[in-house]
Amino acid sequence: MKEAAPEQAVAPKPPAVLSFSLFGFPVRVRVEFAIVAALLGSMGGATSAEIAAWIAVVFVSVLFHELGHAVVARRAGYHPWIELHGMGGLTHCERGEATPPATWRTDLAIALAGPFFGLALGGAVWLANRSLPALQSQETARDVVRDLLWANVGWSVLNLVPILPYDGGLAAMAVLGRLFPSRGVRMAYQLTVVVAGIALAGSIYARWVWTGYLAARALLASLRVLRFDAALGRAWGLWDALRFSEARAEAERATARAPDAFARARATEVVVFACLASRDAAGAKAAYDSIPREVLPSALLRAIVALDTGEPAAAGALFRTVEPSLIARVTVPMIVAWATSGWEDRAMAWLDEETFAALPESLIGALAEALRSRGCASLAVRVEELARRTAAPLDLSNPVNR
Image (tube, rainbow, N blue to C red; front, side, top):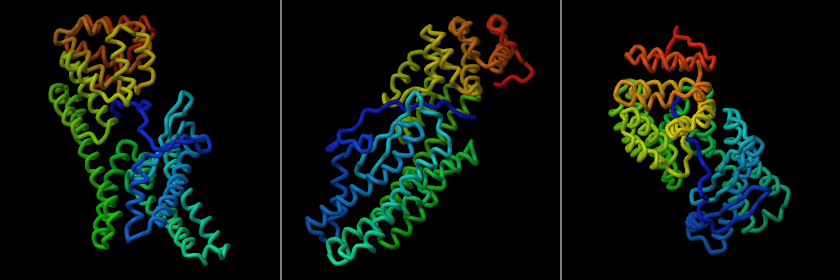
């Protein structure tokens, strides 16, 4: 079962030393991009001219690679922009109102487009080198061609190795997510741990400092994600067992282990739900306010906030965008907990006719059954009345057990 997932808001763009537009794609170059490229180019006692040539090669190659991602992302309905930073490049795929839902094929195509563009540029450089003797007769030209081939062909091949967060890992995640919907993402990180561990061992043996650093970075990042995922899974398990205080504590531990703002928001939402179920309104507000600003809370949490602030129409519109099983997973235990612990008035205020019209029949039936089983007759009657009023027939034959 899927958990509540926050959405990525438009994050503020980091400062850039150079900004321009290429084929309609905004491009931002951060100062650390040039610094890291210069450091890599200076290895082996390179001259100033050779370092400058290497920076130019890296700039063109990384930009062309990211252009591949951006072209395919725009065709898929995204609004991409490119950022060149210390570790290479990143194409940000921002969604618009008309952006269709992402599919595994879309994710796979976007991931593979960058390496394929790099291979195409490398192939063009190889053909030019074969066709133009002048490129082979000058030492500087030979060095530039060699660097271009490595930066495009060599790096593209390495980038296709299934290690997250690189393109091969993203491609593997798309395929594994399609084959194993409930655990494909976790499997992609587990695959990264195995492959990156092998790559790190090989790099240490061969004394490849840079590839060893990249492998170690990917390995540690994936281990952190897996630890976070395990903690968040335990929090949801405790929630399902109606152990709200323990679920809150485990979600807070997951928040501390979060690898990024998006993951931290996911864990924080469980803290909010657990606080509400435990009738800790102040704790819920504090947790909600701590959600990173660059991450938009999930539609489910925004619907719950709308209910709590007396906006049933907004809540109903948001509920229509959420998976019914997830609505039942969160709201049924919460309302039942309120009905049995002194917040019955708050639960009654949530049971609004306008909101009920947006709820799936299975959830209404499950809620009525759960309330009756806990002796909350008045609320159960209210649910049944609203179901009749909104022409949503109750189906109590297969309630969601809580």
